[in-house]
Length: 550
Image (cartoon, rainbow, N blue to C red; front, side, top):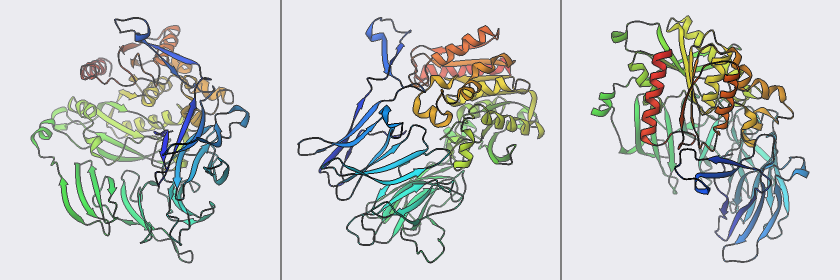
């Protein structure tokens, strides 16, 4: 949900809105600290974990004056069963000018979102806007209230919608009526960086220059209804990723820029035309510690999925002077789940140290974002609906087949590795396509979606009671009989996100099917090993596994 706050100050600091959360209807899931020398309460923890198909917490929204006084409860109770799941989730809360409180409320199936406007004196509500989509609604932080004192806006707000298939900005009046688009096209807006109502400009980051990059743009806040919408003006320079912070005077911005060939550098730039004012921090690639690592930027490749959709991949090639020409033994890094993009023009991919280490050992490394991943629009992302473990695994097979056809990968020597959703996808792909993949490293995998949480799982898979065949087909356990390759399972035993139970259930299925497996567990680690010694140990064991089985 990515809602990280449970209270919100009004714009004039006179009120605080807050949530009251009742988790009493959710059964507790106990995690035992098996590696702890102690016993009893200090060696166990209980979590109110809402499993797919089960109850959610009940959430109320209240308002209290900052100088003290009575709480006013808004006419809202999310998670109440007798409302037919219409108001299941409190997604976002925003204040508008004039101490007007708004809340974004989503139904359980994620197909409908309402923006409610409250009278904070009485708690009464009105529906300001309704957004519906058959695929799903993605929550975001692009609700921007405009200053009520300016005649032209009159209490209006900016809202981002994916109704065209791509997230774009729209101007709405004080009653929620859409006055028209601010941006449009087959690309998407990521975040609103700032608004200058005096000059009539809105600044935002987006993918106008391609889905592998991110830039700062500006567009007219009040487009002329009688003229075609103008293309936004790009303000950042240099290919790659740009993260920005605008100053309060709307004159300058901080640009944090990196790319595959450039580590992060920080600059102060003009908000008028993007011109450089001064460099604040620059770290050249020529520094000795970078040279010692012998880093090689990966090559970005575009291939096609079976339905013709463009897919982007990255290649980390071994040094042919040291290891000879291809084909090479190959490891494919996968994530593949929604809201994440692996392949992009960013320094993070150049300093992917596992990929670089494998490359230095003569192994070709390939990453590819299958259909269902982020920053490509709702149609691309929505391919995963009810299809987890299906279309994503098929696209990863397409990538492997492309590597074989190009003579880059060695037949019979292709493996996979991934974590979380990537751990799930690596195990699933190994099971579904045993003739192509020889081994897989599966870290903290979700092996059955019925054992994951309500909000995430039901968005993509629906309710277990309404999609039993989908849940069955998407479970790794359903496919273990087909596994021929070697599988290494890695998991922290106190993982409170993807419970160790997922790996334990998969092991039961592997034993029942007579399949061999290897297990690397960390009794004192959670969703990802965090201690340096554990990380080093994990990487050593993973490399050892790859050496033996690839």
